[in-house]
Image (cartoon, rainbow, N blue to C red; front, side, top):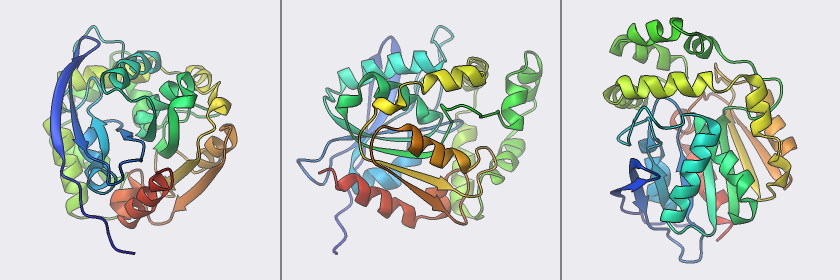
Length: 280
């Protein structure tokens, strides 16, 4: 099969629910395909999804508190706060129907999907924070969740420390890891640090479980793609997500890949793009 031409990416910005927001946008290669909304996690930004944007098109915002979007102290850095923001964002973008790709804390998109299950065309969940019973935070999150300790941990996070921390999330070594680390550090200011602390502190295990209480209402075809060597979230939660959803869900465990599995195994991009294209 011939490879589709790569889509040009442009950057746009606007105020959404009182927050200055930057996003990347690329046209879909198929006119009848639902737009794809890509949601990143901590500590990165929408640039994580450039390999997908050039192949499948779509929209990849920097969530409030991250990247080049606003990082104000008045924003509600919680699952519900982000869900409210995303509702305003999809209204701005006039997305009556869309597909969703979520990674790590981009899982706040699942809160949006539970509010608007009929708007969802297809869903891809990649190594996502579990809105499920039984999850306990990893060691870094446990530090961030502790008052004073979290602030001190952030204060001692240098460029070198951040790079070394991200190394454990990757299996491969090379320019992809360096690029993610450098990009994350370039935006790791006080605003992002505050957003991280507030977000993690807003989400004890019982809140995470409650946030997924209506996952069964999501019936869109779903691909759950999970790097097997993720140091933060066990592969058990890949199947748990598939079981909790109300529609057909396929699990893809990615060998030799960590928390950002498409960067360790670039061929995963093509598999996800093909899955998204099945909805067009």
